[in-house]
Image (cartoon, rainbow, N blue to C red; front, side, top):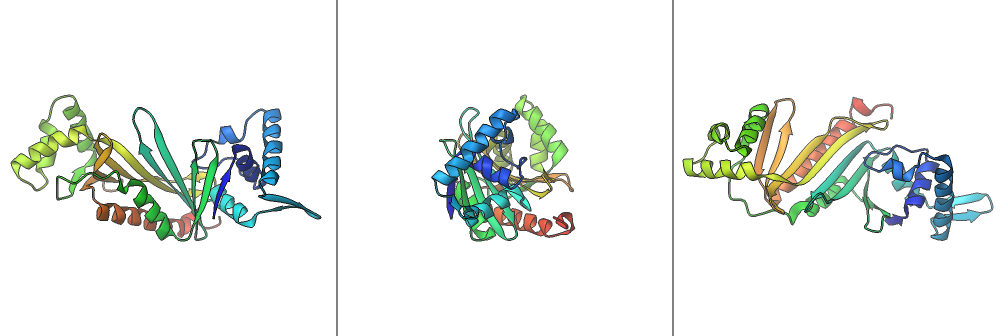
Length: 271
């Protein structure tokens, strides 16, 4: 099922669920601080929901569409949330958000019209497929065949030095990975130029607060991604994989599985 709601409609449904601080949403736009403005928006939202058939007046009051209410309830109180961001030219970006709870997955994005579009996904496997599809077209043919792993603090410092013109530390870090001398020198120059093309982030949510974010970055030059990057905060390392369809699918599936397992654990007991 898919539903497209005007901002006032979405605000009213969230208000009816007593949800005014939702992860991944511009809450100030939906819930204005000025009481008179907020009241006017909610009154407009209720009228629009009735006009569009989401709410139907009956003898005993208003009957709300059950599937719509279910999707918004998951958005309002997810067990975990994922965001997928595609960085465009300038400071523009496109973002999709995914909310999961009780085995129900909901995709949410804000259309160019400003309306909010919600889609219920059948399974978390479909969710992973949506994430894979969102970024698969951005992948560039890999020029490198092996993954690379670096100690994170040293790598960040070496990369900053390389971007300032001093390649020595980055070449030393790259040399710790396998490969020919010419390949490694070329790779050092390539790494210096990498910028985020896209990013997938996910976190378990307790109350209205997301926990530690897990992240998978797509790095490249221009509009295509040649590398996938993931940090291991416990080991203080960063691993880079050549970006291809199978690797992206595997890493996205791992991310979704890890969040599902974490959300099912003690961290969310009592929700």
